Length: 122
Image (tube, rainbow, N blue to C red; front, side):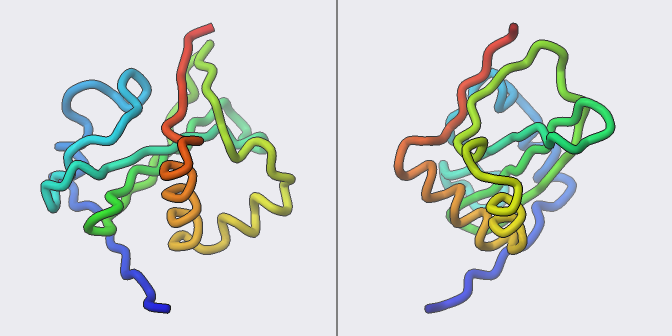
């Protein structure tokens, strides 16, 4: 089994990802600013143990294996689906121990149709 090498998006690539509709408004795949492939995906979650309402976002390209993770204030009233919500805290920690394994799991969820997420304002 070969190990996939991941790297971060550059600052300019992150800025390019932030252009246009947000992933919350249009959660499907989009073009990658690094490789041009239509394979950039996103996943967000709201950690239960955060001191403030926090939204953690993972954005990655399944083609060129670049990624970025961010934290932001959880917009008030934002409700979204989370296929990982069914995991216990221990299962979640185990899954998140390896970024490569975590992103591979998220890709499997995309391929199975469990992602992208749905978002609504309550």
